[in-house]
Length: 343
Image 1 (spheres, rainbow, N blue to C red):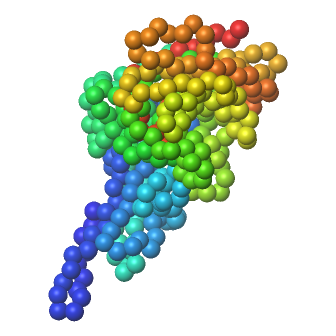
Image 2 (image 1 turned 120 degrees about the vertical axis):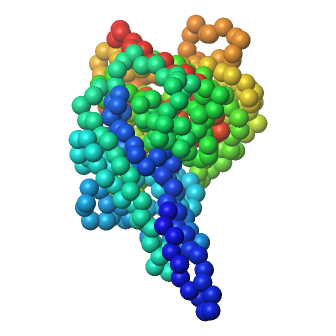
Image 3 (image 1 turned 90 degrees about the vertical axis):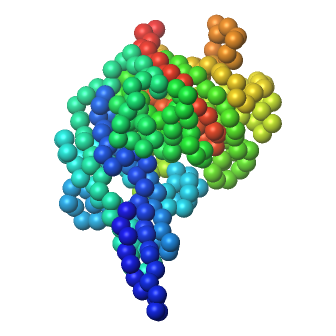
């Protein structure tokens, strides 16, 4: 943070512009692998006076503009930013990133972020993540990228789980690799609160916790950050109703295509532990089967899936897994991802 003194009349005032990098000033990507085509540097810029611009420079290149929120989608609050750096623009090993903020009076603050990048590692499958593992260092939130790649939002570790620190439009965690094809994701979820699923941003009529499968990264759409979330395999979304008495699964493929069971009405209790699982399986003729289920702690796991959908044809032959929270305050427990033999 840079402090600048300037005088007004006979007195002198203190002005600060703060650039807060949520997951630390030294970040590592590529260990144990790279789950998407970009890496994300997340944070917030603020000051006593309105910001006139925010910009970034990677490895000594010219500064480029960086968007700030709110935008009703990925950028939740005033001054939030999400810098997507495509991996092919990163150097192997060390990279230097500068983010610069300028306010309406011309005061300037600059922050340096050191990025360590490894390009050639494949995220191993099976995959097991224990949020209560050895205490990481260097990240203000206690989260480092050797367990998960944070794509969107503020998250924190709490009681051996990872929880949304600020709920909003798609808060996203990524694990995996483009080489992953057929696999099953298992975790637990606790719902603490949710926004009413109303039309328009940021809810767009939906509040959920979800597992996405065969994720390549946001699709370039000319925005910063990109907001187009498909093509991908599918998102298996457990949707919450306003009164929590008619909750149900939906499998969303993108472009309006989906599978849902409108006859299913389940009641969810806030603060209760639930288990959730989702699976992707290749079928003959370039088709793919997606399946999902959720059950409460203390109840036996159902033998059958709650909802299954067939995508025909499949445009994504592989990709990583996501844990998502959309306008819902949730926490996720340990994550286990195992390969599924193709039938």
